Image (cartoon, rainbow, N blue to C red; front, side, top):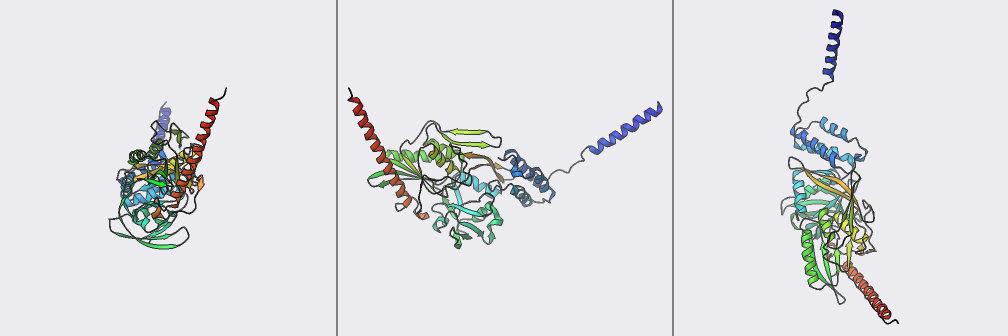
Length: 424
């Protein structure tokens, strides 16, 4: 019996030792900087559209980020940048505090800088000009859509990344910034641009007279919070002036708030599908237009390579639902949706949370939307929407032709109705 008690005691001691070895040792508390990295990883892990994380070892990336010394806030930002880079998604990115504030303010309709809307093709390190903002220093300098930004103040754009370039283009009003560019035709340029407050004026409207007809012209430069209300006001004013048809200009509109784009679509579509949004779980959210169409007349839409994101949602819906033809050139091809998520220190994340397809099921990511009628001779940037804009003339001609066809069809219908009424 004594031997049995000794055996049991030895077994219990050995078991306790094994358990103690299996229990985790006390881990040192995370610093504020390390917590920032972990929070960023967690938020992307919860919301990123691709559950496979582009095939990368996503959990391992968190561990690797924490293995390196993180002694200050900039180290944490660098660690987050490094962690996100393998996803190959330029739209999922860290926004440092000044960048986060700027992006938030731009969705409210204000911006300070040189007026360049920038993008980065999927899997590509080039920073490209989607479009210059009208009336901005960039537009006045003649910078074209598709121009590549090579450097800002001598710092290479492919090393700075999209947000790095954007951050360096911003600064105090009246200050000067040197930008090295390569135009679409290969021409190299080094331009000194003056930073200033940019009047976004996201909705611009006027009457357009063409061959005895009066059309409305409506140019949307972005989709910010105030755009739906401004659009409603502009449409009411144009219709009160007796327009016969409408030209909706989405050229160089690089997008903005998806919700604003959906609300604008409601102004033109009556109980029709606007877009299908697909999330990471395969759930499809089919967005339908609501009651309350603001304009039911004939219309055409102008698009080009600077038409992107939310403006492509609108253009795709109008085209697929047969509401309006698209005139111009192939659109940019951004079929992904991002959300902004604040981090605790004033910085934030832009995370791709969904992709969208047009009502007919077209996935436009990287391919864009082809216009119904291609226009080749584009106007100069400063001529967009002016009387000598050749695309505006083409749109007016298209509307005039459409009106003629509608009038002939109406006369034919009346004639058939008269003949039927006199039978027997």
